[in-house]
Image (cartoon, rainbow, N blue to C red; front, top):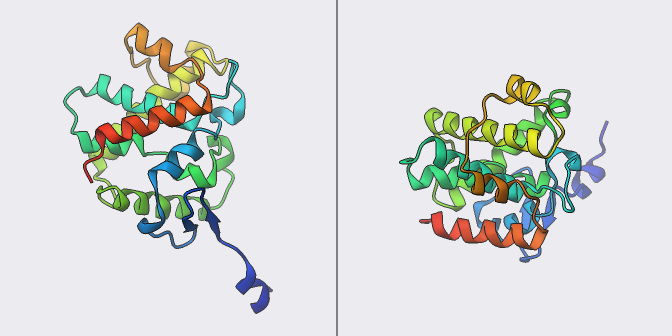
Length: 203
């Protein structure tokens, strides 16, 4: 049984470089800053780091790829939906990027923490705490498209295996695909995420 003393001294918050202190169990939108998100996501590796290239393929670069795939799949999609796509993995700036097979063996507590963080992030940047199902499905489709590209270009999957796991190739323009699938430095990923956020944010 956990003692009262240990419960009181357990730290469930993280101090950010901006100076904010984010409570992971009860996150406040007031403690969320895009500079912290961009800095953190640019330093979190997709695929547990099992990707080719001189640099990690960061979650920051992945989120930019997802937003690009969404624009390709639904060119007239509302700008707020594109912002939601850009932020879809934002909680990983504090909880990291767990690969899907590992998430499958965890209890539901992980998902609870992730959902609370994402809701607080949405509120901070003027989005609904919980997105409409239609928007969520659009983002998931773009996420799967990005995963297909990452799997086949960077993570060693065959096209047949990636198609079975993630669906079809989203068919991005060649130049876009080449740029977004060449792993960037953390500094570039952070800068480009901040620039794209600024272009989409209306809050």
